[in-house]
Structure formats: structure tokens, C-alpha cells
Length: 130
Image (cartoon, rainbow, N blue to C red; front, side):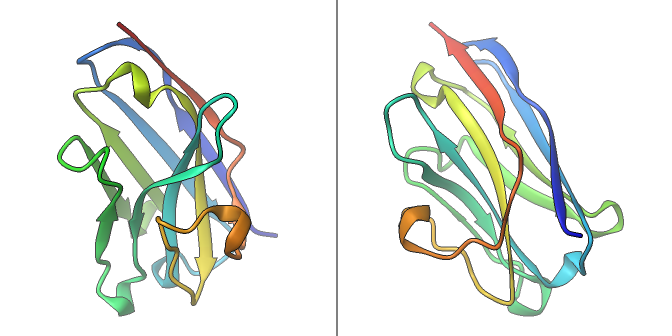
């Protein structure tokens, strides 16, 4: 059974940093396409960062709003994908979800409602105060 278990998050002042983690249980991590999404109250879930499978080059991609501030990375030995968030802004507030696809890239610019995402984490709250 595939499970994505998230940790991290919390509350921080603007300009601060947080790191999210997502452990993937149940399938070959190196072949997974991984991403982080977030959802603010009353808004649609949006893509934040993605990292391709190893055999696709493990290329990364970022939403324009977080480029230069957020970093997605993964540790194959720990089956874990991370999202390092620096220089946080109040508009980064929301519930963050990790996502995983087998053999299919995740498109950040396509809403989850319009693409197939195989697995989701349980979500973790990030609150940035001004």
C-alpha cells in the first residue's frame, strides 16, 4: 500500500524558513515523479515545486511565485522528498501537500482537478505572519 507521510510545517514570521518532509512508502522511490502543492483558504490547490524521476534526469521546476525562495530535493536512501522554504511571505500561508506519480510527470501549471495525481500526502499547515 502506497502512503505519503508528511511532517514539518508550522508558524513562522515573514522572512523566516521552514522545511517540509514527505516520506514515500510502498513503491520504488527513484522512479517516482514528486511535487508539492499548496492550498490557501477559498482558493484552488496550486503547484509549488516538482522533481522528476531519476531516469528522467531528476529535473526540478518551480512556480514563479516561489522561484529563488523554495528548494525541492529528495533523498533516495530515505525515500523522502523535501521542500525547503526560505524568505517566507504571508502569501505562502496554506496547507501544503506532497504528491507522487508513477511513470508520469506532474505539471505545476495544471490544477490537480485537471490532471491525474496517483497519491497525496495528508497535508500540513504553514502559516506565515507579517
